[in-house]
Structures are given as C-alpha cells and as structure tokens.
Length: 264
Image (cartoon, rainbow, N blue to C red; front, side, top):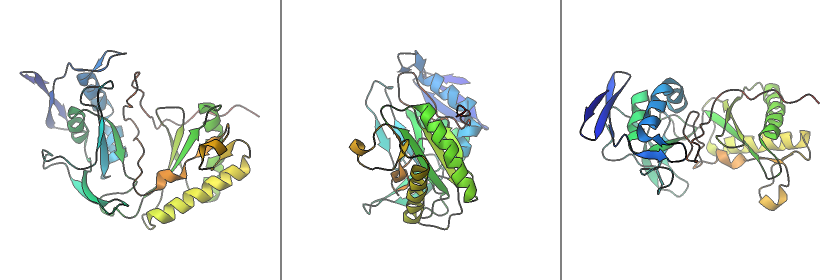
C-alpha cells in the first residue's frame, strides 16, 4: 500500500488502484472511513466479483458518506480505465447507456474510490443485454412481518422451484427481506421472465394463504410477505451480494443460506 499526498494506492489482483481521501468518514455511527470500505471490498473481492462479473452495473454513490447527498450513476464516467469493460443497455424509456461491467476486484475498488457503496447489477451479461440469465424473486416483509416470515416463505419457494427443476440461491437483502436468484438460460425476454416471476409468486401465495401476497397496492397486502415480481422488470436492479448498504450500521447482503424455519 503506497501513499501520495492525501491519497494512497491499494493493490487488487495485481493492479494498483488509487484511493483519494482515505480518512474521510463514511459511516459516522460506526466511525468507518472510506479506507475501511475499500479494505472491506478487498476482503470480499472474489465474492462480489462473482456477483457482478460481466453484468452491467449501476453505481449507488455517496461521495461524502451516508449522511451526504447520493445519486445513482448508470453511465460509465469519462474517466473509466480502459481495463474495465462496458455494455450498451436500453431502458424502457428508449434511452440508452454504457454501464460498467466489473470483471475483477480492482474494478470494484476503483468504483469504491468514487464513493460507490452499493452495486446494482442487471440480471443479464454484457454479451446479451436483452435476455436475463437470472430470475430474481424478492421476498419483502410487510409491516407486522419480519425476516423469520421471509425465511418460511423461502423454504416453500424452494419446493416450488424444485418441482420446476430449478434451483434458487438465497441472499439477505441487507434489510429484513430475502432475495432468491435463480439461474436460467438466457433464452427469454424481460417480459417473459417477469411473467414467470408472477406465476411463481401466485403459486407461493396459493400455498401460503394469509402469509404471502402478490397484491401490488400496499393497502391490500396486510401483514404478509410480498413477492415483488416487479424486480424482474427491465430497468430494475437489486443490490448485489456483499454490497455495503447505505444505512448507519453499514449492513451487507450475504449469499449465506437462511436458517431453517421453526418446526410446525
């Protein structure tokens, strides 16, 4: 680790990445600095790279820490190094953008230097940005429910997926919910995949009446787990595994499997 003025250099995978203002406090409640965030991403470099590899990725940036202003950066900045690839993506509005596609831990560290706390990858790879290779199911606890309720729903969801000869990989959301990522062949459009998410959600709702809902209007959901099928829409992304979430205690979503639900 080298230093230059008010900046240092960190090494990731054989690349040196400059980190400016390493002592800037990003999480005042815990006293975590920009350097702490960078070192965290170095520690989980292999894991987060697997989650982001070759995926167009939106950067959620907090240049002055979690108590400062933030913004989502969809377009790759002009200062992007030539060793970080991009992908051309199209939004429902008709607009397009070239987003970064991290392929190595150094790319994650480079984004962290820009104040990126959370990485939001698309469910596609840069080779084909019109056909998802992941079906993402968001189990979102509504008021009156909690993480434990999401775990119970996730186990019932697993049974449904197994019947369809699919396998889901759960991760925590960094909040109270669970995300289940299901690898699929990149053969279908975003619309097709969203319809699949709706069908699976409704089947889960039918098997767990009173405990799971697909109701879109909040006032109709009640104290149930909401299957947010709209997370499969073309312009929606989910925070990646290992991303730092912009909350005072700096939680991080994990791919660790959820605990077994309590016995009935």
